[in-house]
Length: 358
Image (cartoon, rainbow, N blue to C red; front, side, top):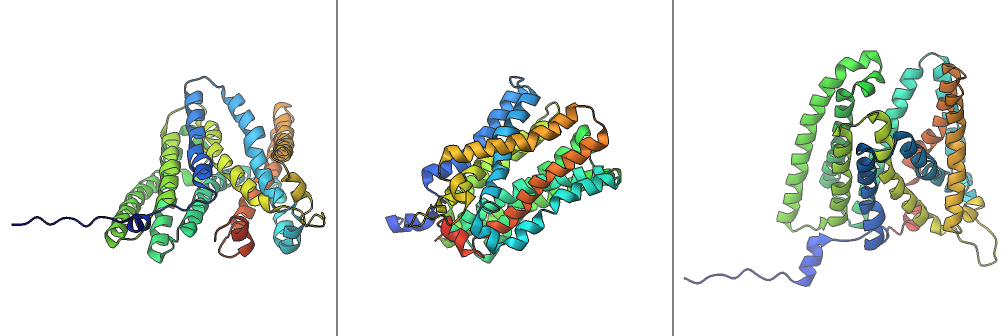
């Protein structure tokens, strides 16, 4: 009875088995898009251990990192002459977000406004992770319909469940939920947990099916999901003081660093013509050197944070404080909304070209 020998896997077969195409490069992606998740873990440890006070952590993050990433969106839209012409209706129409918040506060539904603002802020984090996943899917030709469906379902549910579980278990967070909705949070948590388990099982089965069929495995996508999803679960389910405020900085710093690197990569397109004339206006100046981008971002951060902090600390009344806070939420809303429109690589060839998708 003779033994059969398994056929050797050739180099070409190995290359097909694992797909390793990156957005910028392996080193850049592993540092900025995947490895920068360590920033969230570092903040979590520093805060939970008591080594960094809450106000210092949130204040430094807000001015030096978060607000500048909002400015990054403005740098490639409102400050880009070509974008202002091409997206005139979108850009000027988005300014209505400055009005929405103050109007809702004056109408007596400020609690609902700030609740919806918090939901949109978290959804924006999730959508960025989804956006990076789509970039890796496009880069690695991982666009089969079934994979698009299971990837999207798994990602959205894996991020949504821990957020709802956090709200259900944290009394301070629950107080920010409108009274009529509070009774349904526990039920929603249970439904989402079941749906997440089903989606995760379906996703794992599909990966096994891809292995069985000899289809390439999108390794950068796996690394992204392995970085982002556990971090959200750990942060959202870890007990800590002043949790609703603390987790804003802890969860978002990873998102910020990813976004800054993507913006800087995209903004390399802002170069001058051979005759020295600027094509893009202020966007070209902002992105000419990294120090310019950082300086403009921090100046915006001071404007974005200081006026409302001054009003909050000056004791000028709850209504004025809410009005100012609601107005400045407009910058974040514009950032969230424009981001859902300006990174569509399959619909906008210029974005795909700037990000070197082909």
